[in-house]
Image (cartoon, rainbow, N blue to C red; front, side):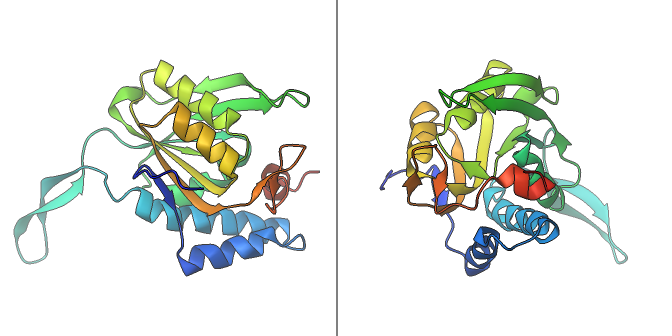
Length: 213
């Protein structure tokens, strides 16, 4: 599916693809699955954060004082969509340890597949931060659209969305609802099945991260 936009990045890096393939394997255990989610988030974050603003600050080296660039402005915000999005947070925090972390809680109606909010807590002032929303799976796109809606309603402006696996249907829905945000996807899968699960996918990311069924 061709979206013809600079706002969508689907990664082709061999390390990301290799690690996603291990995630897909039904025999990959909880500990390894959790570690891989963090590693993939870190690899994706390296690219997704390439446009963070910089400012020159004065630093004293062992030899002299110099002006050198550091990240500018309010600290970045990472906002996982609960609960699976939590699995990606530490990977991004490894890159930007000073980032603030918010949370958005959504659940999907089993019949309509529509998202419902049960929790939203964002760092203030959210409008001055670069915001990275995380969810390993971008399936129907309903939760992603709702999460970005909530962030914008609270004043968020500079928003990036990161998903490890996406279905074309969900990617299209998110991009059409929020064409101004940057979307980063580890792999674009074939389609959704009749139960709105991504195929071939990797199962329920939340269950596999937290060892629940």
